[in-house]
Length: 348
Ligand SMILES: [Zn+2]
Image (cartoon, rainbow, N blue to C red):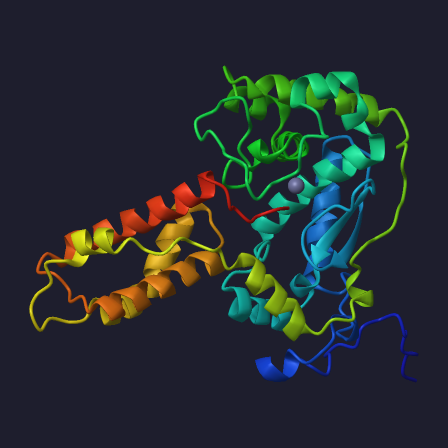
């Protein structure tokens, strides 16, 4: 006799799995029927909970599927982007945004630990304490993770997520410090951050957690905003919005700079635009690796540059290697300057 089908259980194969991207994009997020249970996220969340218990914490933030990585304000919960709950949706995310944030086991754990920092603060209201504010600053500081200006060599902050994200805001500083506290043993982080001012923050987080171990959270639950099962927008609209958000408004290229790099091209040589199209993926990956900027954003920049080189009719110079190095250094500098002078869109 066949077992009764549990209506709560997702069907093994959702009806949209075999669809092409443009057909899948017509689906509303709420109609995808994705859930953490039964997906690869189930074991990742389980591993994350095990890590908490290994650190002696009974605190377990609720994890649910949302539209991006975040912890809802004032709520001890973690939203995980819904596209991580199915390989087909991860592929769509990759096609649309060129990378899948938290798509590997390590990256996923890193983000879970970071969001856990926010969630435990929401649960115990640590950031309302005077001593918290004395160490991390006022959480009422204007929240602008897009526009912070980091000091890359500062030893006052831990390093966990890229781009010195701890420096974005006192709340991010705390979340990042908590993430480091969680990912290493006390012996490890004391050794790793020896002589750093950030060590005071780690010791403070350590003492907060020790207190939390023996007390119940002040806030136990709250509204799970942007719950994927209730998001009525289509995937097409979801991606149109995100692509618009990530498409940085880089300044126009300085043609004078491009002339320095490509001005002495070989007459009748290969067009720079064509050569760059061939090398685009490698160029974008290198810039992303060393700047930590979003891949979609860097790809847009490189596409724009290819277009400009085409308009200017550059051909590849004789010293090809040198012009390639120049180009990569130029682009990395442009992305970094841009990041430090204002418009930096990343928030977790
Ligand atoms: Zn954060």
